[in-house]
Image (cartoon, rainbow, N blue to C red):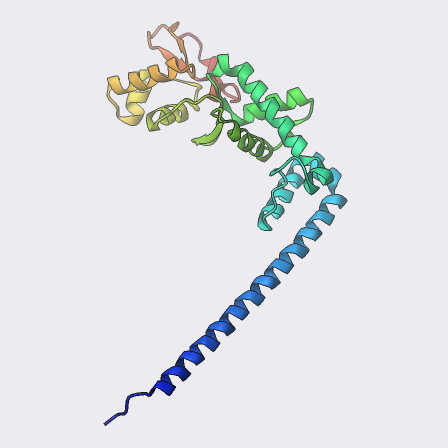
Amino acid sequence: MRRRPGIAGLQNAAATRDKFRLVGENVAKVRTDVMQEQLATFRSQLEEFARKHKSDIRKNSVFRQQFHEMCAKVGVDPLASNKGVWAELLGIGDFYYELGVQIVDICIATRSLNGGLIDLLELRKLLCQKRKTDLASLSADDCLRAISKLKVLGSGFEVFSVGKKKLVRSVPTELNKDHNGILELAQARGYVTVEQVEKEFSWSTGRAIDALETLLKEGLAMIDDGHRDGKRRYWFPCVTLSSDTTGGSEGKS
């Protein structure tokens, strides 16, 4: 007959568990302290790197993007505040805040043409014209970072993808899957017809017209009824202005 463990045995087992728990906690604390020390060292080295390459970070868009990626890996956001060590080191916050103001100006100025929806590449081109710089000096990543800071204004700024394009929306317009599909289809020629939409998506005439008229009402499309075939063209400046092929070569046939 097996004997049950006594009180002393249970107490020894509990004491052993407590010892293992304490050892585990100490190991975890040591690891955490080592990681924090390594991060502090890396951040210090990152600050030294920023001082050494300040000019390159400000002037070279590719270098600037790589610098942001390095910062993200150690939990540093140079744009979190316009004050503090990073603002003093680089003035990088000023760069993005200024860029954000210029983006707002351009979006407002072009809203009557595109309904508040502009291709990211077209926005970059207009920004470079405004800043009197070449396209290589301002990356898409720069624009996206500046736009992300505009979201705190609650003014409807958002970037979303339609096909191969990234579009910037500066008005609080809700686009559904039907609208996005039409915008993607329009990238080929800059325009679509009701018949093209019906054929491409196997929609009814009513569904196609409803989606197109909604886009027209929101100011995202313009209509062209001047063709001999009698088919109305719905043109979309947001996917046309920055395209190499605008559909203008088709003619009024």
